[in-house]
Amino acid sequence: MDWLDALQRLRDERTPAVIVTLAMVRGHAPRNGGAKMVVAPDAVHGTVGGGNLEQTATDRAREMLAAAAAEPELLTMTLSDKTTTDYGVQCCGGEVTMLLEPVPVAASVAVFGVGHVGIELARILGRQELELHLVDSRSEMLAPERLGVPGVSGILGDAVASVHLHHEPVPEAGLALLPPGAHVLIMTHDHVEDLAITDTALRHAALGSIGLIGSHSKWARFRTQLLDLGHDETALARVETPIGIPEVAGKAPATIAVSVAARLLQLIAQPDPGDVQPMTD
Image (cartoon, rainbow, N blue to C red):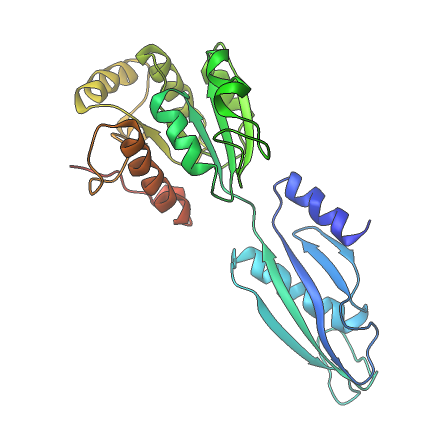
């Protein structure tokens, strides 16, 4: 498979990878400058020359994957019979410098409820490089004439995010469509829906953060109901509510959306959702 096709497939499968490029070649080498390969956790596509050169680059790329490295790095190797490594000798006589570029999996975010706040949030998150799921039980909230069409018009017209629209009459069913680690924002028009989504989200251990819009009194009611549904205090601590950052105050939908988006970006930047500490007023 061509390395570019392989990279696209890995992105579609949400599998991280590292692109290895022969950035500079001095003297003789198995491949010319510009040769590429893509290293995934369990596969390699393309070649930069085989042998010790390629195996060393593959090992380093997989170390980067294991460490979730975000920054590219250079790896220089001398291809000489005087240079012995773990994978033997390549005596082409030249020297190569390889560029190793991580291609991380984009963060996934699901907004449940595309009402006044949800649509403003979609406008903001659409400009981020992430996978954005918009879920609503009301089909009219997801209509093209309301949201626009990516690449054409409307609030999604200039979307950078990969946008997925889900009309779910039973909205909590949309949680099953999300990849592991997805961040969930709950802000529907109906507190019954909010409770059902929160309950179901707490039963999905593989999800990332869970944010709930609303007041402290709303959460007090939800908390009692969720305890009655069998959740314990550890589970309830996964829910951050009211979601947002206190530095951005105001009740206008666009203002709330800015606050929620800012907090979400903080959560995405954290390497382990399990380390997230709920915010308190």
